[in-house]
Length: 166
Image (tube, rainbow, N blue to C red):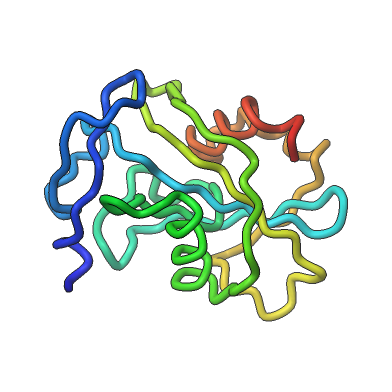
């Protein structure tokens, strides 16, 4: 099956399922989908971020900004953990089981709503990592830089909401 043919859940602002549609028909500015984000953590205090670019599956909302190294839309009848495992493997070639940090509705500064599941993989090193133009920041570095315009609104809201669990 082609990527755009997969069905994805459409949710309301309370996170309730209200329908489904093929991935290629999703309007990321209007449709609320269940997005799965994957963070990479090295050691106790270092995070790896990646430069968002137009994906092989379509246009990215935050092209040219730094964000979570992995993001995927959960497919219809797929568990969030399955989507995270698929995303880490397909996008970053990481087979390690991710840890769920949390999930819920995010309202971004630009008015877009996303139902998000946040997963993290703890790495021993950043060698051989398949992240586009990676940057590494400590928790403190993210605390001081997160509001800068080169960080995606999704990452900003994830950091504000889930930082204490990371």
